Length: 430
Ligand SMILES: *Cc1c(COP(=O)(O)O)cnc(C)c1O
Image (cartoon, rainbow, N blue to C red; front, side, top):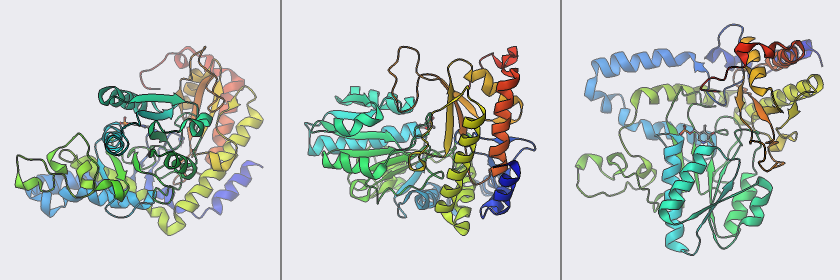
């Protein structure tokens, strides 16, 4: 394959028109949409309109006239289309961490009522830390135990003590994707509930929560949904749980009739009970533009087309880097079915300065520390070294971007430019 072949793939790409939806700084190759999605062109004008017209002129009337009060449900219905959920099954609120607190509490409450002998929350050691912290805190306060294991051990650890299997669908460091259907089924066969974090899945890989047997799910608004920094997150519960689930952050927006101002809490009939306080209207407006930018793919083959392009992009990049950068070891799975929309490599020592040097060349990925020496080598995520992480968003990336990014990475390694002192000073956000 040559660079011209990559250009030819772009010329024949049915998703290519979607790139025009975004503000993409000239000369930049952005491989970090898995951490912070890019800015849709529509967002600035929409937020401006919400500020000047809906807030400035409409003032309090806009809760009704501009539909502010319906934002959590309206956006939820749009996100539902991306994750295999029906209208009314998803609401947008709070952050991923807070939504995890709510759904994990709800799941544990259901288990406690039905099968009180089940006391274990099972998760993966390499899960995103906030998920583990929230689970640990809830386990401590509710009298459960958090059990952490390597990915391949999970099915064997599900048993009559397991209350909830809590997993992130696509691992944030390795890019490895779990088989949601198989693991949810295994959890159910053992009598446990299955809770999925879709932070690196929604808008990136096909998700079918209902078909694949999930009980609860949460996801992030600012990654592949392009909702902007700190965008609100979303939450889903299977309809059989939504009407019975209790979550502890009961606020007036989750009340059956918030404007009755009753002193007694009465949960809303369905998913609205997962709302707590007043929605962040400006952030919601930006998130809606981001979600719309992903839904625009529906006219070009939808999630299936996005997935096909994502796999082709990650395959091309991984193959080029493996061929040209022998210093790096591929961490992400080579099999398409096991790979999310990112590619990661490890280098034992120089991961951080290599990424800094690459960013200085206009190729933006990011860096995640690996497990420290002495930690168990998992075999799952290649956790021995530090991780160079490259997210591929098929909505706006081109094949030639994947090609050029690999060329830059090779140049950084062979030139030794990563040795410059400014690339070796660690910043607060990596
Ligand atoms: C990004 C991410 C989060 C982020 O949580 P916030 O509450 O938005 O900070 C949580 N969990 C996973 C798995 C993530 O990848």
